[in-house]
Image (cartoon, rainbow, N blue to C red; front, side, top):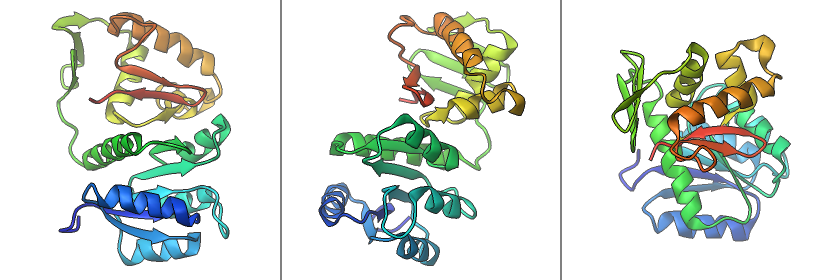
Length: 231
């Protein structure tokens, strides 16, 4: 990271939005670099790898999904999408291509900063030795002993429920698509069996959440997937 603070590459072709992002991020001690096209962005990213990328999918010279794929060929840098494309299929496509999070325009500065913090926390854990314990609020997962506790009381999970929870724990804070979770937990032949995921997520919530209808930990990203809260 730069001495001036984390270095963020903003890839956005709309000048007013670039100015808004620069002003908002600079005021929170981020160092901001800008690109208005995909080609310029890829060149800047290779010349000076950023700590995080903010990417608009609708660029004049290259689709944003192609930029994600090109970056993912050589870097795990967090990528946060900011786009006017609000349809679920666009979110799923970007996340499946390797993006870490997705914000639909218009959005507030507070929400953007929160997503950046989550993406950078997740990035800092990638490549590090897996910690023996995950904890947030009253939820505690002892990975070494394969035990789960809520409020100090042990929760007994089935093997599939445990695998589903661990997939979320390993990517805590990040949106995981239905296809990703189905592939991780059940295997590639099951990537379209979303009803499996709904059933087991409901069971997991009944065991972990104080109010399954208003979950604290296992959050739904409507039509896209799930996210495990990490704060």
